[in-house]
Amino acid sequence: MTGAAETHRVLVIEDEAPIRRFLAIALGSAGFAMEEAARGREGIEKAATAAPDVVVLDLGLPDMDGKAVVAAIREWSQVPILILSVRDGEAEKIAALDAGADDYVTKPFATGELLARLRALVRSRRRADAEPPAVAIGDLSVDLARRLVTVGGREVKLTRKEYDVLALLARFQGRLVTHRQLLSTVWGPAHLDDTHYLRIAVGHIRDKLGDDAADPRFILTEPGVGYRLA
Ligand code: CA
Image 1 (tube, rainbow, N blue to C red):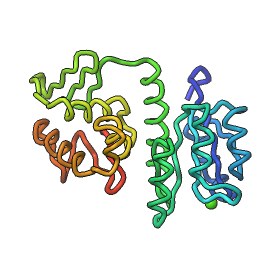
Image 2 (tube, rainbow, N blue to C red; image 1 turned 60 degrees about the vertical axis):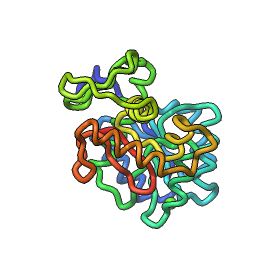
Image 3 (cartoon, protein in one colour; image 1 turned 90 degrees about the vertical axis):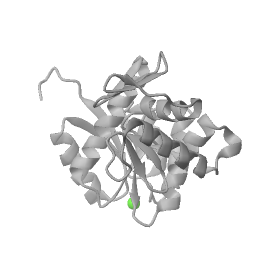
Image 4 (cartoon, protein in one colour; image 1 turned 120 degrees about the vertical axis):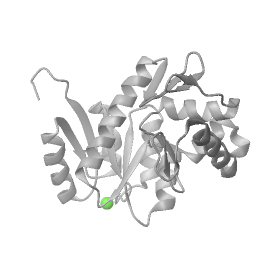
């Protein structure tokens, strides 16, 4: 770390003081500057006043539903939000993702995984700001300007919907995209529950890219939640 390096600000909204203390040490040693809030209301205020680059939000807060915190921040900010969920909180987690959170880790979480997710969110935000024309993952290239997909330099022919699914994942590379986000963007809001459309399309994309669902190089499955591009 050098003094000239850019420091990313993380806002942690978490009511458990031991977790905040742990995160302050882990984030500090990884070069992040941490702001903290113990309650949802205070967190929403700090999301405005502290101008964080990324927000870490515990869904189990004493004063507010985590989904409501996400929705309140999303009224005026596109700051990436990573949620901390507990293992039996699937429905709440998915509701928070659909309300506009970007990713999650499950408690108890591994520090390395949390830091990797935070870095991906900050990078992805910067990429979205810069609107890059092409995304590369290993030998896969998705050229968003030309709608051209290649693996190892050879063009891959996708249907329009298959391309749209892959392009959405590519725009959010490294970030989780939920079933609802994919279905509503690619098939339209009337098809939010047609997850089989998505499953079939992703199967075809994987076949055409030569990707193995059991050991994926490109498209990773988050069971019951969505997909992410590696
Ligand atoms: Ca909590």
